[in-house]
Length: 474
Image (cartoon, rainbow, N blue to C red; front, side):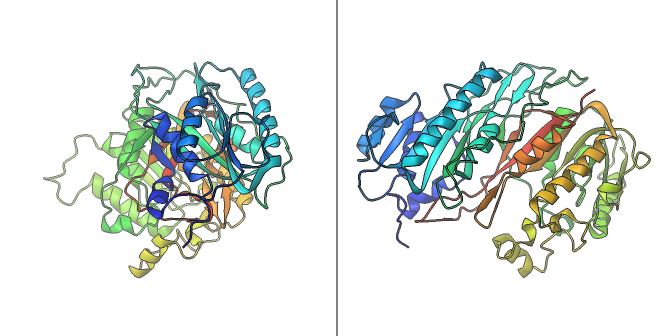
């Protein structure tokens, strides 16, 4: 297939498809973006850069024979790619009022660039979310929502910084290492070039409350996790998350003998992980099939068939009900100290043609959670899905101890050429009753990369999952 989009061969194209990357050097980072989003043929359209790496961008463009400009006030007719680099403008010292001024400037720049940006070409914005004392501000999410009224938001990439921040115990959840966001917007048939302010407020509840937990910084902003191979009963579930992930978060957010809860228990990963760390595991599971597997696994852990090999010094409690999480009541469980869960990623398991689905069909395995109409994985309307999912969490919050924590593992979704920022949208809704804490990223590097959009446009392979963290206020 002929590449009409950029100058790269298929071998060069593939590495950029990954939705997260190690940030090595500024030169490598900017070169990869400029080369990927610049057209193959030479013409009079330019690359526009707005940021603090002007000399480096000039050097990169000259080396690659690309016309460039460092200000949208310069005289040129067409823009083929634009970068707005906010990494040195937005820092952890930036306050929210300063950010709002920067945001208005960015919106003005994007509106100006839009007029000369060629059809189906991209604008990139590089920005980080910031932590200021006990306050967390998801600026990248907010700006993405604002700019997506002008241009179509196509994708995001997560830049993973290798430096480890100072490891100091704290009463606030502050992950070590760091990340920044690369947001990608396209001018296309779905963008209008006019700005409409977003109604979403990401900053209404983001001041952490002091709790009895002292965080030891076990969790970084990003981590790579390669799960152990799944056992026979575990592979029956189409979207199981690993117990290694469960143990990482339970170690951070709970203490021994705390009660850990999962309203969508699947095969019981959360409960098994909790009991291994001397916590109690509770939950519900809508599917009687998976509820049976989860209870069998937990029973086997508590009362192993080979007791001489697997004797437990401290036996923990577990309880998994075959019940719709919407129907949980106060009498079902004791007070919950921590919730860890991963919801259905909308109805994506019902989408036909996915590679993973084909493999599971070949093995005679279930490709979705269930056929139950109450199953959230069967809700086709995105807004209704968000509403019902949030209602489940709001119901469980009533059972939780004030000051306790929640972690939700989820990812943003691409469906039929459109992006649905599920992690961001869910966070905005949950802030009505919860305090938003820093998100961290589970990065996957053991999945094959596919050349989506090759030669035509850019679509990443989503290899990062959001681990969204919240606190129930006192």
